[in-house]
Length: 238
Image (cartoon, rainbow, N blue to C red):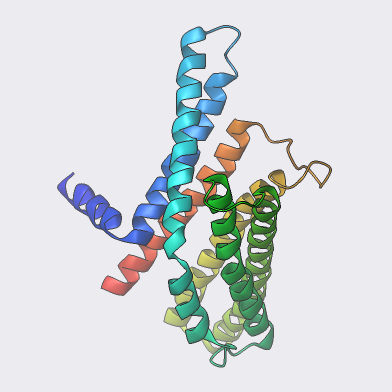
């Protein structure tokens, strides 16, 4: 119990860890709130609790938007350190990663402008900026999926080579890497489904997800993010 509490405290003390926890609670609240709201006709108390959870989820989402006002420099530093991916062995992985970094870098100012417009700090319409931000987020997710699939293909080739040569430790390490990439694909696909939902009506399934389904997809991807962060921390500490 004490170790679990200490691990949670360490997670909350880091910015990335706290953001992942807030994200998980945000989508989890939307999931439960959406389910309870569906009982509105038969249970008034469930309706009230559901609405409260949906409002709580909206406030947490707004909190994350405000916190992301300070993410531009860290993203820029990462993009500069990656550059054109000279250390990558595969050209496909390299250029997909570069395009992903460009999409991520452009996402932040679009979201900042939309937030500032909603807060009436600047006199522009926020709708087109939210739309552009969502489109960039979706593009980044799609590129991330393509990158992970490409990496999986390369890892499978390495795994077959190791099986022929009999490298036991290398095989287990490659399998762990493949599991991480598969988790990334699943998490990004869940987020991408929500990104499409938030596009204008008429685009694929845009606007058709009920609150509980948006919450389910977001909770699923958030839990994957927490699992990946936990695994990364264990690897760094070992």
